[in-house]
Length: 134
Image 1 (cartoon, rainbow, N blue to C red):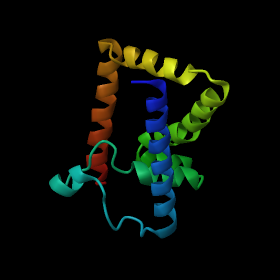
Image 2: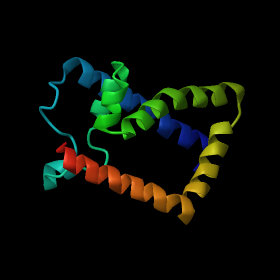
Image 3: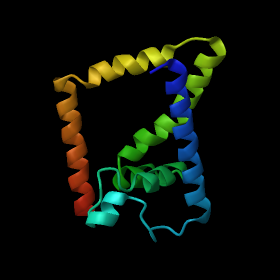
Image 4: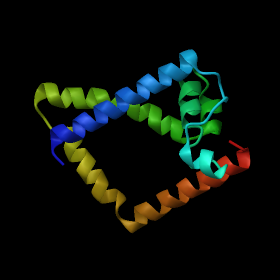
């Protein structure tokens, strides 16, 4: 994948995330519906269920509540805030520091000694979401 294509995809994803987040903050009735296809079909939450609510709580300053709702919210929030600036920095200075980082991280995350613990963390979060009744 080219640098420009990767940057475009990430910027669109972050922009979409902000639009969805602000829509939910301004117009949504909290907890009245679920956009999670897994939860809607099976009745069980997916590992990322509650992430939007966790991001909303974090943006409202409720760090602990956000962490309890879904720890992925902290990761998503950090990513949504940090990556657009990094990409704009690269584009303005005609560099590819994020592009290089992305491919190095992709290589690192494919290693079994890294991938397996991360998969276990995702499964653990999934079990926790089910037990919390999200």
